[in-house]
Image (cartoon, rainbow, N blue to C red; front, side, top):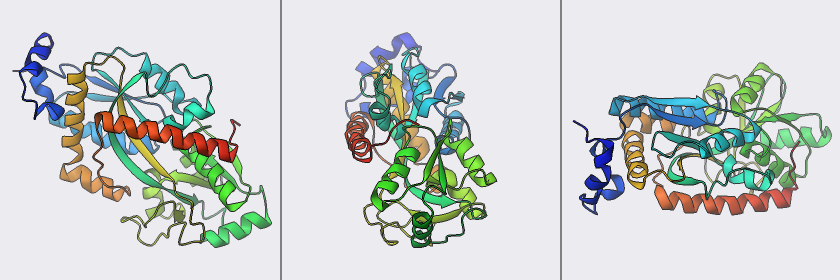
Length: 327
């Protein structure tokens, strides 16, 4: 039988210091009811691509429902605001992304602080971004061909993004800055709707996380031009890097992580991290992560928090240098 919640602190106090960082969740009585994961984008984007298999696995492992609650809008900041105000009882978590390290520089009046109002739990994945085009709208098959067309036709092509201030938006602005080109930005309320319109031929291209574009690339619905990474993706060895294609400084990754609202008991946040690690290191998810263009990360708790802090600083510089603004 699970220990009731009111025995949690006594149990943790008696636990070995060596096992405390990843104590089994059941030892604290958690979870005794469904757990909500606030995903701040509509279904169908990169966040969903990793959230749904992860929490389906955890539901199976623990016998308790982990429920995805999609709350999109304003580049992911609406859902973040909702999660920041949620009860800090261990039953609501927030699955944010690199976008939330960019938002402080793009949205000066946020009613939450990603570093102060949340407890960092762990990194779920980090995937390179990929330049993808709709093959019926864009004839270019390589990055040099794409750049030649853009330079001859400034402003003719457009790119969709998950919204203002997201990594899709900033990746596009960084690309324009480094290649001295102009492409029109079209913000959506999430990567899912943007990707849907790209596949349908309503927009020309995207700077997308490889995880959400992978199935469309394999299916021929999108053409991958280049990955914004140091090396080619294992799952897509035929897609060159931007560096190989003549833009050596263009490197962007989309990462996804889990936070708890500030005040969530440390032992429950630690238990959540332990169960995430267990699920992510299972054969099924490791294979799935590889197919989505990423390796299984190992960044938890305070270390993940320090990573986020460094990303906030890094993207502030990109915003300043590129001059990116809300459309």
